[in-house]
Structures are given as structure tokens and as C-alpha cells.
Image (cartoon, rainbow, N blue to C red):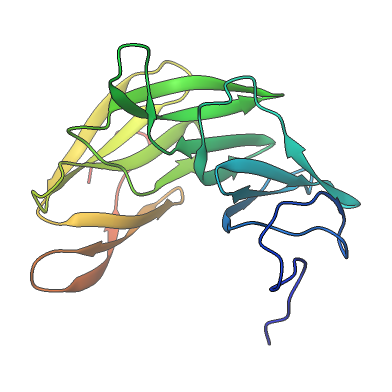
Amino acid sequence: RISRWCGDADKFESIDGRLEDATFCIAGSIAETDDGCIYISDSGTIRKFDGQEFSTLNMEQYYIKADVLRAADNVLYVLSDVWYDLSGKPKYGLFKVDGNNFVPIVEFDAENTNIKDFAVCKNYLYYALSIPFADSSSLTRLNIETGESEVLCALDYTVRGICADENKIYMSCYDEVGSYAYITEYDNTSGEI
């Protein structure tokens, strides 16, 4: 059974407040931290439900818009939507949220690459970096503590969704033939696939 938790189908605006009063403009990705807080991306903003009410995080970097949210322990991670740097180049990135700040983990060139989703497991972020119109990706593991990344393998398809646990990476993918779901076993210590 699925029931509505909060929001109003007749209102397309972001209103903070108690569960019964809160509304969303366009609710997107959702993540829960170990302390029980629930975060929802809403038209680029991050909304936090602390168990009592919703509030909107007023991020210092107002030009960075949240797209995909993931949580590990009590840390919230964000895959941003595209923004433009001071030279006019389109960028996007993976960030850790610290209070009202996006702390950069890694930033990408939005003209030549694309990430649809990412996963967090232990001290690692997993993402599939795609080249637009190429129907291929590279599965990458990034150490959150050191910032070091390594390509685990090349993929002949575009990854749309990804999650990981200590033993497996789960991916939903597509190519010119159709859609697939893959489970890839790997050694989380060595990165062997």
C-alpha cells in the first residue's frame, strides 16, 4: 500500500512547516541520514525533515542546484545539476553537505561528460561517467577521504541508476538495443570486479 506522506497535488510551491502543511514544487531525490533526518531535492533546493517539520537549507553556493541526494552515516551527499563557472563553462559535481555549504568532492565538465546517479558505500562514492551520445560509461570508484579515483571498468552502455553495498554494485542501464539491470560483484577492498 502506498499513501501520501506530505505535500499537496494542487500546489506547486515549496512551503516549509509541519508535515501536514509542507508542500513541494517538484520533489525529486530522497535520502535519509542515520539520525533519522529525511532530505528531499525540490526544484534544485534541499528540503530537510527533522521529524517535526520541513525546512529549506539556504546553501551559501546558491548557484549550485541539488539533483540527486544520497546519505551515508549522518552525511548528505549531492550530485548537482549543471551550473556555469565564472568563465561561462558548464560544470556539475559531487558534493558533501556541511551545514549550509556544498563541500566539493569532485567537479566535472558538463559539455563532455554526464553522471545520472551515484552511490555511497563506506568511504567510497561510485558513479558511472558517461560521454554524451556515446552509449558508454566508465564505472568509477572515488575515495571520499583522499579524493583519489580509479576507473573500475569500461561499460558499453549508459548507466541511469546505481547503488552499492559492501559486495555488489547494482546498475540500471540502457543502450541502443534496450534496457538492462546489472549486478556486478566486486571486492570493496581491492576494487577488483
